[in-house]
Length: 410
Picture (spheres, one colour):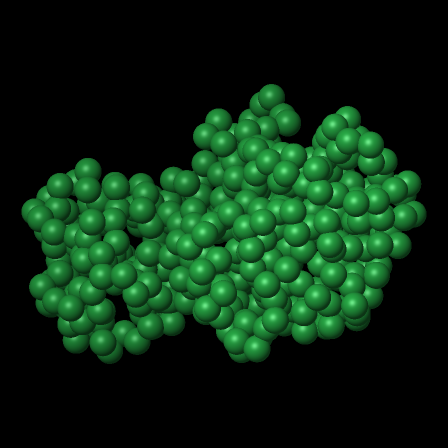
């Protein structure tokens, strides 16, 4: 039985490890987060991912913080976080720390696979670092490949069975070792260079980021002209065969909000990616100013529906809602209340996390910040609100095809 170590047991590494085990591999999860390891040893999923709790419950995966365990495995997958630094600069510190910790325990014949999203030339950097600081040589006595993860949250297990696997490597040994892992997935596999594989992942995410920026820019234009963006989208998209304009919203998350920077940092000037970032980051401020045109925020009770970065998720990483809340605070409201049904905590950002009826009771202004399914029940929302309440629904979550709503008019 082939033995695999996965370094980083978060939203990328954990579902991947559970899936590998279901295919018959022996898997060990390695993480430095002691609190997380305790939860995993108790066989409790630390986040929502359909199908994973059942796999974890019956799993034989060992979870440890002991990196020396890698001397007993055949393959090593690195799935640690790769954040963007404040000045649009790739942060390689997590990857570098892992490689440094691996070198004393590595054995000839092992394979290292990067699976975290990385900037162009990162795999080449890892190769150079390994060969500079050890006696290992890529393609001769160890293997190295970049095999990007391109899954959507809440679809991990399903997409592992269907999405083609990109294999970025530059020698035959590394390709053969990658095939040994991914052949049981029964998906298409494509061999390419390190940089091409790195760009595939970045291009996938950046393309979506640009598409959403276009939608948000159009929404800003429509609101500036006091026109209804959802009427315009219906007229523009219906039965029109060329192109499709997405709906606007808060575009965030650890992939979309940062991955553009891994390409953008290599360019000295402004470009389409940077412009998209500017547009998407502007949306929280735009929504506050839009609300201020129609109601006085100072002294008002304001409810924010949603806090995570995407629909029906419990993932708050790189959510734009905290930014929205900070802009609300600048308007000095009397009270801010939150409703995030996917988080069990009773307090978020110093504010109470209440159920939807309690959050809306006596509220003057409501921001539908995330398009959670629970917020689509307009009957509950309208029943809880007072007649003059203002609702900002950029997602059209309430199905009224309007961004700015007054209960009394609805």
